[in-house]
Length: 199
Image (cartoon, rainbow, N blue to C red; front, side):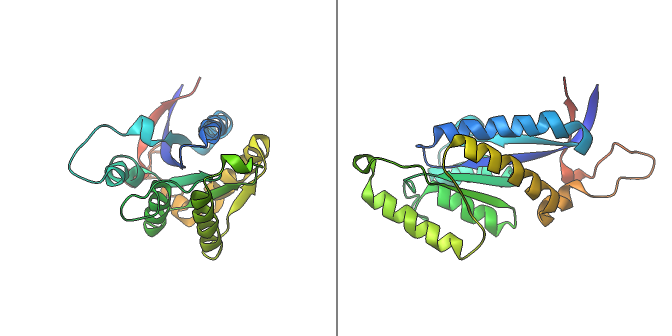
């Protein structure tokens, strides 16, 4: 049976080297939905540039991604391994630009840094140093997380995603608004209600 739910879009931000993490976050979001969506009336949808953007001209590539994908998202989850990424012309990388713009909008950003061992000959030292400098910078601005491998990440992300949904003030403004009288299942327009069918 269908039900009304608030849809929260989750931006998955990272350089291209963390494909396994990008797949894992989709699994974690799906698992959260399977367990909590019907009761909480919240559905989490992953959003990625490779699936949610379309060819467009007339602006910087990253700005097009910002317009088409990022600005519609409510939560950002970023993963970084050994690279920071390629400069966008305004920021050191697309991932950094997405994080900074998301934070400027007052939305929650969850940053995960891998501590997996990488063979030295696989490292681009300029990228690695840029990543290390960025990590030190963001440590002064908030709370970051590290992970040793994918199972470790799965456990941390599952728990911390629930904490963010329960405690973040921006998320609460979307999911805790009082419902109109006479309509238990109707949400405010700002909450992006949709009809969601759960099998």
